[in-house]
Length: 218
Image 1 (tube, rainbow, N blue to C red):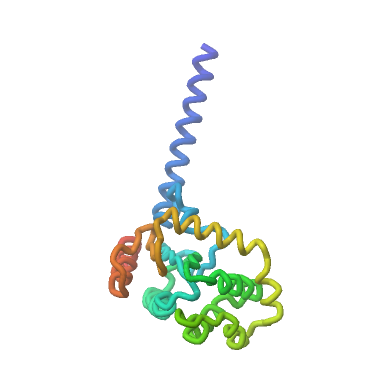
Image 2: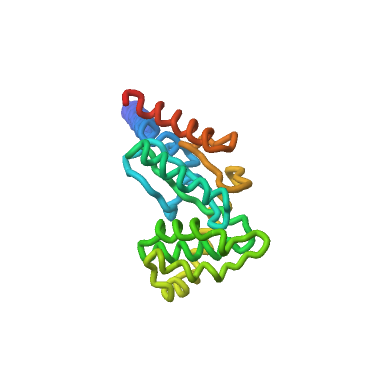
């Protein structure tokens, strides 16, 4: 009888754990969509730079390259989408520096983050990109003359960008990009769903479909 009671108790505990785990995952899935899946960390790492409300139910993950012309072109479009749907979209930036030497600019961005100026530095990079990222004659050193526009301590940037942690961060993002079959930038995912056909309208439709799904009564 003792063994039967013990076995029954264990079964109850196991069932309670399974139910609790399923309930928790269900609650997380309802709130964050793909974030509750097993491979959530492939999309969003602890080091990922984010923008938008913590309560947003639509996660827009973008694998980007600071030297990518198309990334620069999409930047204002993504910002406009976030303004159109305030509080509903959380942008997650991941690095995929596929252009030769692009990791140089990622290091600058990560150094700018330490000064609380990541987004300001990125904006300056994108707006001045034609001057330093020309495919025919790239001149990365020219970026330094524009960085003060972001309110940065430039000498500190030169020092902080050599932090070996940044190299590991880039390696992780590149590994995740490969796992998700991101072969060019920008690579977009809305709640884990990839942008299959590339374009402004297609991206808006993908994001809008996730917003309608997660905010059905608004």
